[in-house]
Amino acid sequence: MKPIWIVDDDQSIRFVLERALLREQFSVRTFANPRDVVKALADDVPQVLVSDIRMPGGSGIELLGEVKARHPGLPVIIMTAFSDLDSAVSSFQGGAFEYLPKPFDLTTAVELIRRAVQESLREEVAEATPASAPEMLGQASAMQDVFRAIGRLSQSQVTVLITGESGTGKELVARALHKHSPRAQGPFIAINTAAIPKDLLESELFGHERGAFTGAQTTRRGRFEQADGGTLFLDEIGDMPFDLQTRLLRVLSDGQFYRVGGHQPLKSNVRVIAATHQNLEERVRQGGFREDLFHRLNVIRLRLPALRERRDDIPMLTRFFLGKSARELGVETKRISEAALERVSTFDFPGNVRQLENLCHWLTVMAPAQVVEPKDLPPEVIGPAAPAASGAGASAAGAAPALPPEAAASETPRATLPVTWLGDLQRDARRRLEAGERDVWEALSQQFEAGLIHAALEFTRGRRIDAAQRLGIGRNTITRKIQELGLDD
Image (cartoon, rainbow, N blue to C red):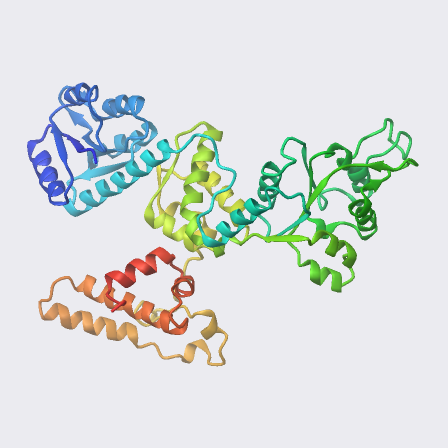
């Protein structure tokens, strides 16, 4: 790993930071003024640059501009006195990773630099990745199953039914099936049957002859004709009107259809891929969908997992969509802190990948700083604020904690449930403090986390992923905590 560069005219600042970083196994190079940094950049590049704002012979803001012009992905931390806070805030517009107010806590400074190093390493990986956007992203096992299915179907022209909640990427899968099929050189035509009025949908699918109805001034080819030799993607097939389902069944059976107002049968060589977020079996039972059409479409079924079923993919997708939004808007890509990413990863995303993409677009526009923190997330992701306690006698120690759904649904009223652990915690903390113990926070925090994880694992019979979801944390987090707390023993 490349060294961390520290730029400050104050020798004591350079010395203290250098010693602290060396203890953390980082290599360090120090500079007393920006001029020497600019010269050094001709031959070398740091992993992270930490610079003061006001120095003889140059400004940290000017140095920031020089560095960003040469190395846009290099994280730069600006050190500033409290009186220079306005300058530090304005430096974000120049692409600073973060600012470090003086006088600073050394532990905080090292942690901030470590975060910047992690960001720098991610930037290097991103730069090494081909610039072309991937068709689909996903490392979770559920998505790997989808990718394997697309691979197995690559030489087939069989009809496919894609199911999954709205926003899971059904059209992306349909396009991938087309792209990797023998029909890849033919057209890919997509139509959302739920978005077109019933009176127009028949004409959209099968075309119409001139004069077939009022306004039909010319003959029009329908989607089946347009997709000849290629693939026709019928999205939200579950919403197709019942009478049109009969015509679609005829096309799928013998490949023949008539334009609206036409008398000559037409044939089209089309592979049909359908998709729906509805339960088609239930629609058949309710009489809203033809059973014979269902069986004609349901030759091969691919189910796309909801985003909450593939939480491991959320960090990768979040960074991808932040980069995509930044390119579309012509701005610098926002970074997201690990704490904010952890919060995003525990959100259920009822709108799935589409909702995550919209969130990243919102953050690109609305997040005030270049690094997105938990406080920058929208309210639906952060969650509702806890209501203020009413009455003068209410206190944090006496307030009942929020109950899980299982407890909330029980017959025992919330107000009658005994809450003693907060008082026990305070008494234990006071006893430790009076005994002169150090690191009380760490010791009690570890006991608290271990107790939560142990209870969750008991409840889920050792299933870590299930336990993590019920606790509202990520799978990687619970695995790391189990190792740190020695719960594997």
